[in-house]
Amino acid sequence: MSNNIIFISDFYYPEFTGGAELNDYSLISRLVLDAKVEVWRKKCCNVDISFMKENKDANFIISNFVTLNEECKNYLKDHCKYIIYEHDHKYLKKRNPIFYVDFHAPKDELSDFYFYKYAKAVICLTQIAVDVFKKNTGLSNVVKIGASVWRDSDLQHINDIRKDQKKNCYAIMDNDNPIKKKYQCIEYCKKNGINYELIKDKDNKEFLKKLNEYEGLVFMTAHLETCCRIVVEAKMLGLKVITQKKLIGAASEDWYFLSGKELVSEMQNISNKSVEKFLGCF
Image 1 (tube, rainbow, N blue to C red):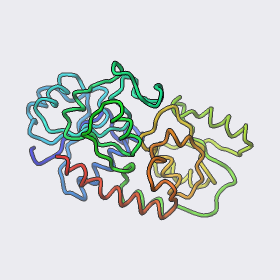
Image 2 (cartoon, rainbow, N blue to C red):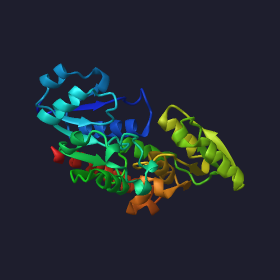
Image 3 (cartoon, one colour):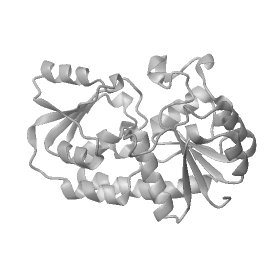
Image 4 (cartoon, rainbow, N blue to C red):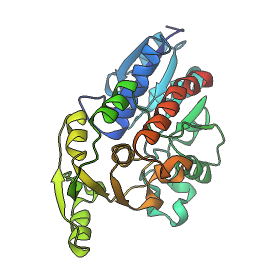
């Protein structure tokens, strides 16, 4: 399998519909369709040392790896070519730099340092993700994509459904994950006299259709978002966004002022180039 890629992650879309899983799905699609690379998907829980030894000459992309055992990580570090696709600060024990002053954790809070150090590259989504990674680890083997990754068909879907007529109302994600701070978003709207409605849908395309009905999105977070896919999608749909910019990776990029078709074009350009960045690291 030396000419192929083995992609390892805790979960995959559509089993789990999170920003990391959607990013992985989009990248894998582009590797297969655009670069004609064969990609083998493996869940961390299904990877053992025998599998690693059988495929040690392959190129590995490691996404979320919370359930990947230490023996496999050590084998990768010592014997394999691998890239870490960094979604959520796993180089920190708490996986969230927000707990520390200036996002800078004490050295004893670092996690998997040598696993990161011996990667061919650690690929981050945005500038703030790169900066915080380097600040905490001191490592320089880091590459920036510049945004989340989308498939062309998903970006076309956003262009197709976008409309100018919106409800005089803001959307809030109906998500009970405390990191997404649904109740703080509700409180913010009440305090500031903003009409709001809660929306949710397990299907991402259907969720975007619902989101597209609203004037804006209120999104708060208890996490340093390495990009924040929903914020970018809301802006591509032409919505206003109320959020904490210092905690949103997308806001650290020069393109953040764009919206609508212009932002879709920029995301298409970045997504197209993402494949070259990954393959170039090997």
